[in-house]
Image 1 (cartoon, rainbow, N blue to C red):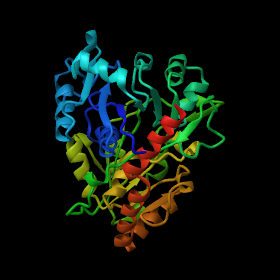
Image 2: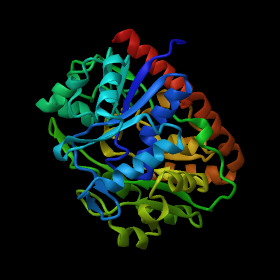
Image 3: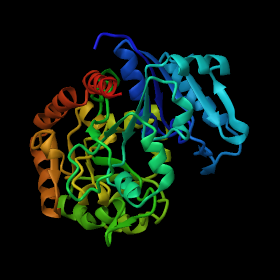
Image 4: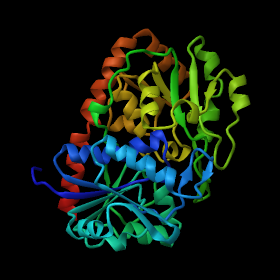
Length: 386
């Protein structure tokens, strides 16, 4: 597509001013701008923002707005963002007049993770695209009859999902879920100059409550992680490091993890913002991680935004299989596992042939996650369907 479009991207950068969350959303805006589109970032979630300094909800939006403003300026988007603080609907960034003009004239709105509170207010945009970044959970909630989510999803013209291989176990919702994946702006991710001898990951122990559907429980990462609790003993002396938060619905058992040989660090110490998060990944030896239980159970084909950044940084990735082997090459650079034995063997394989897997990791990122390719396809499909 050579046509230059006016595109609005939504996200949670100010809502959760944290390293990984930042890259999840800013790479959409950066990648679309790289393609020559007229791009704006709007954050209109209706949610009270999180203040990482206080470890709770922000009393005022000052820190969150300043974080977003600095980030946008750093990437040349200083006059292309707007953020609404829910208290009395206070807007920051673009003026009301400019924001309204952009909405009236926009060709496409990419609602990443369904973060827009009231998409109907953006109906003047030619095409509204919903990007489901939480497959299985999204479909279960819709199947359970969550009216607000149903109205939100239905307000869009076209629907994408990170669930690229949604199995028959995933509830049908009446939508056509087009497969997509995280765009990575490759120029922002290079191999680090130094490498720490550790397989690492950054994770939420739990993000929200488990769901029950058709008599089955669909859970979070903690359910899967505990299956691999003895992995450090199996791969010693290779170090396994987890940058894990305290857990939102169940607390991270840091003492137990340490006792089992895991190196547990606080993400607010090692990767609190966009730059330190990138450095943490780039200086890691490789990644090892599990996926949310629901992603595995539903064989959704979901693949982590974080893991894609490891690949782009020439860092081999050893991650739990969610069905992504149907659409991504595995065995070199990217190794999938289902069992403890498979996880241990994959780590040993990376150790034995590190340079081979390092080079292959970058090749996978270039072939499958390059923002130029991912976003060109997303825009073309959205405008054709919308």
